[in-house]
Image (tube, rainbow, N blue to C red; front, side):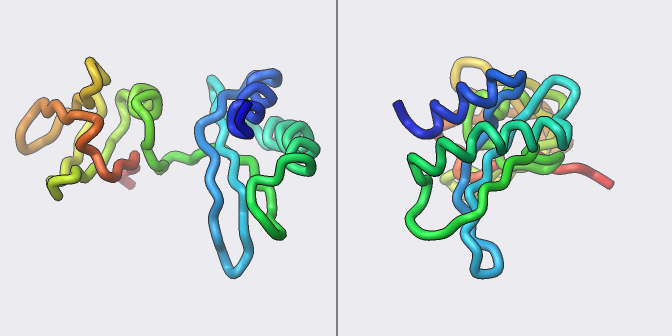
Length: 143
């Protein structure tokens, strides 16, 4: 089993879903970030509960060499989209993406169908973009 699958099982045991894990460097500190979601949102209490579950696992199976800080949080309103499931969970939200061919798209996420992302753009209406051609994508919020 992988560390990520073990973390997934742990957060699911308390009603959360694993969104993503990432190793980041901020202000010369290494952070192992675990992003979780839940219907209706993620509470601070649930993040604390997940931290208490995950921490002993990381004592045995470290995600990085050296010192790091564990951070459990929701992925936020503006978040990276890395998997087809991330796109499917973002239906109805605003999405900005770039393709390997350097095309840029912004619009409302309509759906995922046959490994394609369906986006409704202001300029060209409905666009179908093959998932494999996407180099970078994120949700965004218009203030």
